[in-house]
Image (tube, rainbow, N blue to C red; front, side):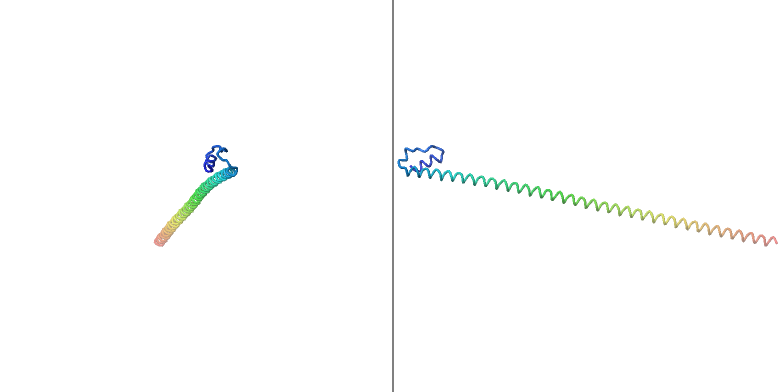
Length: 143
C-alpha cells in the first residue's frame, strides 16, 4: 500500500487517504512524497547545473575560437606589414642603385668629354705650332 500511494504521488495522482488506515502510514506516505519531491528538485538542479556548465563550456570554446581568429588576423596583418616594409626597402635600394648608376654614367660621359676636349686642344696646339714653324720657315727662306 505504501508504494502504491507513493507511486500515485510520484505520477502526479492524488493520495487516496482511505487506503491508508493508520496515521503512521499517512506520515510515511507524506515523508515519501517529500523525499520524492526533493529528489525531483535535486535532479532538476543537477540538470540546470549541467545545462549551465554546457553553456559555459560552449561560451569558452567560442571565446577561444574568437581569440584564435583575432590572433591569426593580427599575425597576418603583422606579416603583411613586414612584407610591405621589405618591399619598400627593396624599392629604396633599387632607386638608390639606379641613382648611383646614373651618376657613374654621367661621370664617365664627363670624363670622356674632357678627354675629347683635351685631345682637341692638343691637336689645335700642334696645328698652331706647325703653322708657326711653317711661317718661320717661310720667313727664313724669304730672307
